[in-house]
Amino acid sequence: MITACVLSPGGRPTVSEIEDLHATLPANTIWLDATEASDEERAWLERMVADDVPEDDEMDDIEQSSRFRIGSGGVQILSLFPQDISGDDVHGVNMSLMLRGNLLLTTHEDEISVMRLLRRRIRRSHNPPDTALDILLHLHELKVDKLSDMIEKAYDTLEDTSRGITADDDIEGTLKSLIDLEKSNSLNLQALYDTRRALRFINRSFETQLDNHQKRIIDEILNDIESILPHTQFLANKINFQMAAAMGYTNHKQNKIIKIFSVAAVVFMPPTWIASVYGMNFKRIPELDWAFGYPISIGLMVISAALTYLFFRKKGWL
Image (cartoon, rainbow, N blue to C red; front, side, top):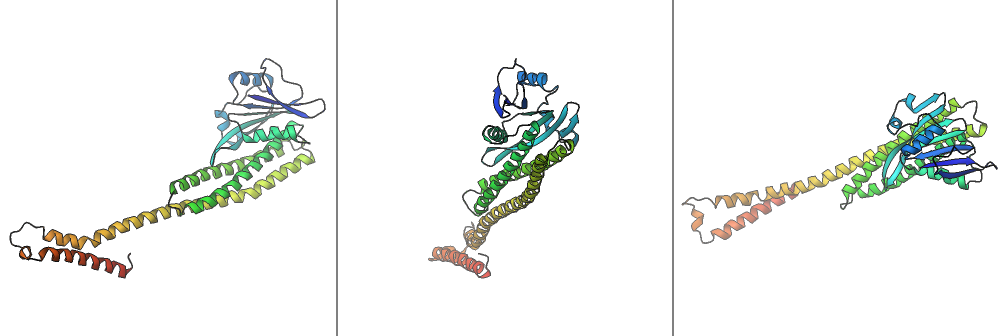
């Protein structure tokens, strides 16, 4: 799917979907967004905008030179966007942002909630972005806001998992939530560093083109990132602590169960020894002829077990 943002004669941007791939690029187009582009849509983009639209595997490169490039056709940035799937499950989506003159081309393989928010802002805002560079900055601003919301949600999840650690009903669910949270926090941290590098790259690449308002937006976003980064480290420490606490509590419960079995085995060892003696198949065992031999042997078993149990209690082992 390809969505176009076109400036109307009055200067206000409008967002609509490109359906006719045989048509030319609408005049005054400042933004094209391609989501899971088909081969036909990719060919149309290469014909109208860029000579080479990056493939999905090319957007996974981690080298600095691959993620931030300046070429004859313009500037290309690869940026990571964490995306909620369901509950605490999060995965990262790499997006390509190509800025050529006053046209921004964004391509990505999965739908991203930030893109929907940007389109909504353009449609409903009283002061929408009206240049490709403004859209690029608004996109990063919404991305950082989204990351901040995800970190706040992580704090709420940690409150739930802290109570779930000592609950006996769903320790496995608590451990799964902590594992999902660790994955989400790692992606958030990676996305924050990625965004900071991207904004610094934009600042350098468009130093002479940025107006005071755009510079202020970049500075504000960078300040927000610096204020959010310590929270990701705190969350990482908190997650690791709760993981260790959950595993320790689980081991403690298992040790208590093993302790019960161990004590039971020791308590019943003397009665077992008495029963084994009188279960021997020798012809001459004097007690076998006693009239009260059976109740005496049962009494010895009970007394020996009781004395062993009381000894354990006195020592504080129970």
